[in-house]
Structure formats: C-alpha cells, structure tokens
Length: 216
Image (tube, rainbow, N blue to C red; front, side, top):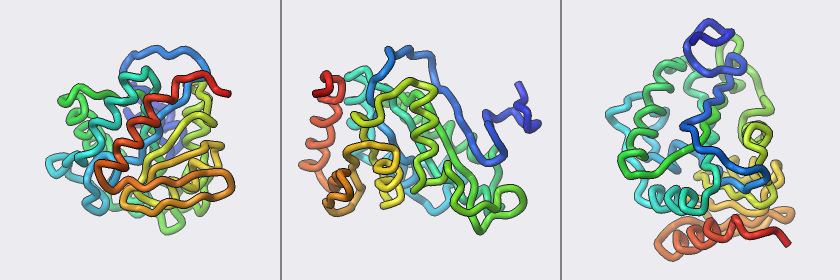
C-alpha cells in the first residue's frame, strides 16, 4: 500500500522511515537492543547501495541472537545521508535493507523494527535539513521506537560504530552503549564500552542476557 507521500515505503515524513518487522509481540516496558546498521550490522562500504555487496560483521549474529533469546526487541536506527545527498533513493535503501534482514534471517536471528533518517544539512530539496531531531546524534529514532514498542529506554543499550550513536543513546536516556573499534569512556552517566574483540563481545552478550532482570 502506498503511504501518504505517494510511495510504497513506510515513511512517516519524507526523510523518516519507520518499519515494524515480523509479528513478535512483546510485553510493555521491556528494554531493547538498539543497533546502528552500516558498520555495525553489515560491513560499511561507504553509502551501501548494492544488495549483492552486503556482508554481515562477524560479531553481529551472536549479538542479535542473545537479544532474541532474552525476548527483547531488536531495533535498527540508521542515518542515511546518501539519500539526502541524492546518491540513491528510498527504493535502493529498501533493497539493501531487505538484503541485510535476509542475511540475518538466514542465520536465524531477527530484527523487530527499522528506523532510518535521511535528513542532512548537505542534502537536496526537502531532505536538506540540519540537526533534524531524528538524525543521530539526536535521540529521535530511539524515542520514536520507544513510543511504538513501549520500551524502557533506561535499561536499553545501543551498539554502533560512531560517537553519534553513543550520543543518541545518552540523549535518549540509555545508560550504556558499545562502540565498534572504539575506546571506553563515561559521559554524563552514560558508559561507552569498546567492541573490538572476543572479550568485549562476551561482555556485550552478558549485558544483553541481564537486560530483562527487574530494575533496581
């Protein structure tokens, strides 16, 4: 079915994609695993636009599998400035994203929601907006997912490959995030943990497995 912007894509406005994936039902006030996409789920190929070139990162399948086992939602939150810059459109994004989800399903792991923001100050036309609330490091995509899935943001965590991902998590009220190939840090009550090897991955998996415990 076409949306109100005249396309077949789940756009809530010209530069914001919000898509519920699958039919898993969750009780209210669960934490979530938030994931950036390019550079976190799949290897970043610099504005990915060819589904045939998508390759999953080695550490992402066990990460999503841990969240699936814990029974918590998995939510992808991705900036897509390539759309704003005119490199490709939402149809290409849909093809690439569909391939990402297909590769994950082939490994028996599942995502529950995808949000994407295409606004950027260097964009063209209606997508040429600076500091849009949905664009990371702003927390809009996380907050929108929380409204739609009735999430407990404070107990949620985020994994990403850029400081903007960590900043979005902190601004949304999360307490911790894992930064791919990053360094540990603490920022205003938000703990950044590195994700560089098997020991870091083990810590992330352990944190995911404890997310459904009752809050203090």
